[in-house]
Image (cartoon, rainbow, N blue to C red; front, side):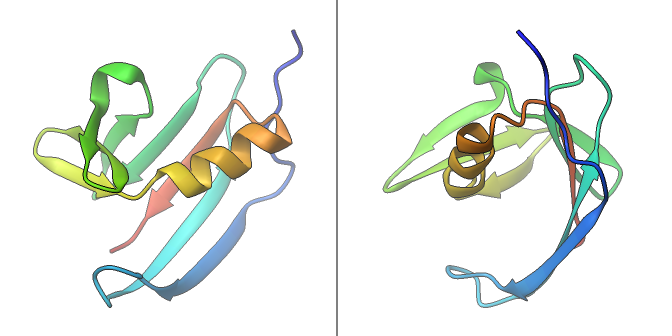
Length: 92
């Protein structure tokens, strides 16, 4: 199976639907076999089943007490596009 990432970095900003906080997300190309990895405050949070916790009406991933909530929408979009290697840097 061929693996896919993005060609160029892209930046998304807005307001969190549940937190009301402003955020910036940078989507960055990643190397083969790296998977989908979130990065917040220098901490890498691989999106793997062991890091997923179920939440009421949402999905979160957690590593070292850093929890990212409602990741299922972005993950679904990436899956539809066939993207399997990506670094997602979150600045808030």
